[in-house]
Image 1 (cartoon, rainbow, N blue to C red):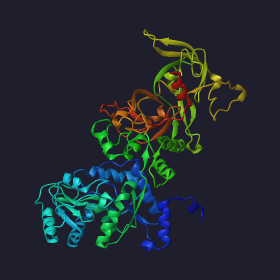
Image 2 (image 1 turned 120 degrees about the horizontal axis):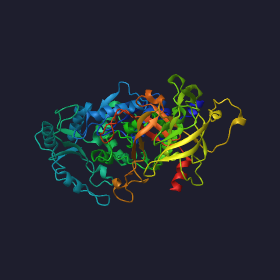
Image 3 (image 1 turned 135 degrees about the vertical axis):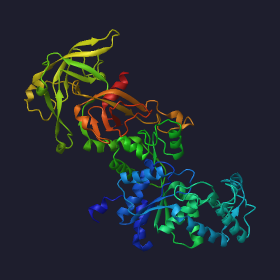
Image 4 (image 1 turned 90 degrees about the horizontal axis):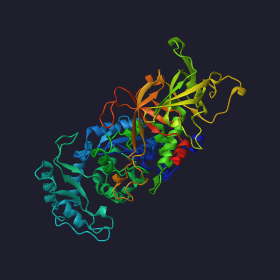
Length: 578
């Protein structure tokens, strides 16, 4: 076994596939599929399935299809189809020419249904949806036969054909499989195969008014496409006997269904029904809101596809459901962005600082420029020039007029270092009539230029020890920007667990908008999707949208979304001080 093979993931699904290849099952082929329903946007839980299905195909030199399960026209839209394809590509996977739809097989599925009717394995039922539910029984009570269960097959054929022609109203009749109403598995109690639905389909238009149910269409679509391993999430384990039953009854090619545990993530919801509620009720701006666990939202927030793929590899594939802590995903994101994100300085809550002993009225061509490192993790990213001037901005939180014991940043009479620049000392505090601090007067020491930088070439004996290094921007050169501080959408790890209503656990501070931030002039060239580390603040990306989530204009400012915070011990100290 070579090193590449040793590093490959090991899990029960891959072990099954390795054994199948060894036994020449399916002729040694591996052919998987990713079968999303185009009735919403994909979320990070789908990413696990995408990475698993496409990853296995790639690992075993097989194929993976992208197939849309478009069997419910009332909930499906082309918008969702397009977004799903974009998400799969963003994750780095390519289905090549193998883009399929369940609707591609509607005629064939109808022919299979006719065959089952002729065999006596399916019948047209006139019970309503509520009556079918009542007849089905419960987990502790067996079901009872429909009064239409023993119709002659000729009558069933005639009724089914009339259903297709549109002669009956919605919900008046269904086609059901004739299996066993006394089965211990409720899914086997004569499940519905077709329902009447007079609705326009986004691909087939009004050609059909009867549509197949998922359990019927899915297994046969797998069979038609020659899928070898139909990998599903754990909730379909009880559906596997039905998957097998349809294929065996028809005597067609039979893939193998394998179930794995779906992804559950703390501090969010991955139920499509709940996500739709969040969008439709206006709790978020849309499917791509950066607080949403959708792949479009995650992408807009600044997550990288490498992070998501690494996360899916790290959590692995299991047979039992569990919940993964959001902290793991954020850790992997920071680990990735730390290597790739350029460092810049941005002041989110500006406080004006005047260096009173710095030369005034410097000519434009004599502006002092300091060397700043773009990324200490990657020397190849080089350096940039940062303008320095007499008037600067620092963070409001980096100054305390009466500092507590554990506060080491700027205070009256105290000296701190400015990143890549000089030591400064606060000598005066300027306040407005209300007593609010509006400006600091400081002095600087010219001999300390660049003393915190690896680029500094002065003698080590020239360095004075200070306990804090602050980021800053030049007031006359900085650019005004808008910053959106995104946090977890929910305030508790398991939304709805205690309250019974997941929406009651929404985090009221999941989005804080700062409209008068100042960033260094280097960011004038920032493009949509670019990701930066704002020193001491966190990771931020340029938002592709120029409008706020509530629809108001940003006034032409560049908008930065906070992707994630830094692991800053100061955050804990500040919280304790408050």
